[in-house]
Amino acid sequence: MLDLLKSTIIEKGRLYHFDYKKSVVIDENFPDADFWRTFAQEEDLMLPVGVYTISLTGEFGFTENVISCPSGLACELEIEVVN
Picture 1 (spheres, rainbow, N blue to C red):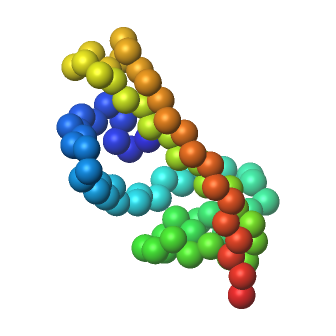
Picture 2 (cartoon, rainbow, N blue to C red; picture 1 turned 60 degrees about the vertical axis):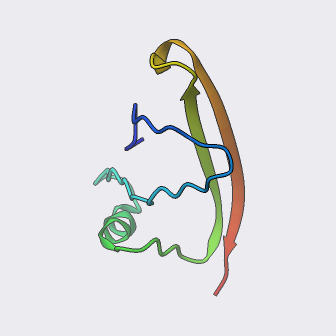
């Protein structure tokens, strides 16, 4: 979401890397608020033991007017963090 409407020209055969950025909204009334507060303050992505589903989406346009002609890709994977 942080790269919303960012433009990148993608070339075939070239590898692209986009840095991970945490984005956390904390509801103080939520039972796990302390966990999310600590999670947000950690520089690295440190997940506790458990099973997680990671969803990635991308919207691409083939003209300069990306909003009028979106074409999307999506991927979902499940990871397990063990001790």
